[in-house]
Amino acid sequence: MQPRFAKHWPILLLIAAAWAGGKVFAQTAQFTLNGLSVTTSSELSVRVSLVNSGSRGVSNVQVTSAKLGSSTPSSPTLPLAIGNLASGTRTALLFDFDPSALAPGLRYLLTLRGSYILDGATYGFSANSFATVPEGASSATLDVQTFLLDATATGNKGAPAGAGIYIRLNGKIVGRTGSDGTLTVEASPGPAAVKAEVPSTSAGAANVVLQAGQTVIVQIVLDDSKEVTENASLVSPDLVNGVLAANTPTFRLTFQEAGPVNIPVSSLDQVELLNPTSGKSVFLDQDFTLLGNGVISAVNLTAVLSALSSITGKLTLRVVAEDLQGFTYSGTIQFFLGQYALTGSLQAPPSINEGRT
Image 1 (cartoon, rainbow, N blue to C red):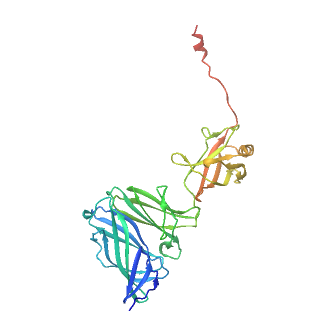
Image 2: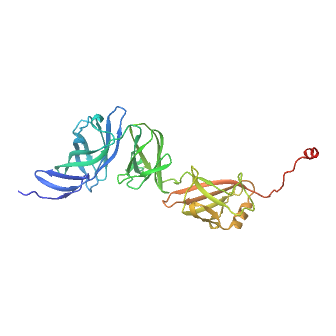
């Protein structure tokens, strides 16, 4: 009897074949290796994520065997029951191997085999992915999992946020999430501020402590109910000791990160002069323009200086701009407007001149 072929799309792993009662089913699958690290117990720990990227849920998922090269895991005990996997969901797996049988710096093929049930029939899967054994335990592994906000769910944790979420580690962008809303990166041990963000739309953050050779999982819910802006300083090269000269030939502003490095903003949203007395703001958007390298410059300097001179005391400007990636930068700068220009020359005291011949 010739086998019949049909298509199923439950667990996308790499290349897999499913079987049930002598029937062979073609299927596509995907297997994602999320991280590899050496633990403090001298075990080699491999963390992987099994994703059901098909349109239907499956049940009774289990992993029956695992190999890294020719090594089998010391834990967990196999078979490993996973249970049900709804469409679009994932489960994180952790396998410990004896590192004495694996050479640092080399790549080994990780192979997982298992089974699941769909429509009352049992199917098998096989998944392969290469993993590189690290040179040592000088770094930590950070596994960031992002979720949409759902006020009705426990902890407000809704569905996985999906692909393209920017992940910042201690203020620096280290990557973007995959289709399952997850990003795994190697990082230096120590305190870490983790931020997940959709530019100008939603964000979430968490603080963790990373330890060498260990994997830390961070789950972040993206909150879209608050203003999302980036941390940056608003500065002006035309200020001298916090004073803008009344006869200044230019008035330029830039957003800067540590370094200092100009942030190349590409669109100017708002330039607002705050009035602490009346509480009413003066908007100067039309009097400024963007130059190269993120420089915001006054093009109608007369109008700007006139508006600044209408307020006595310390002045506060608030500027909002965006970069090409859609990140919003909002900052304020405080300064005084100079009213008088002092000129003079230094002369020696008379007593000094009298003593000279």
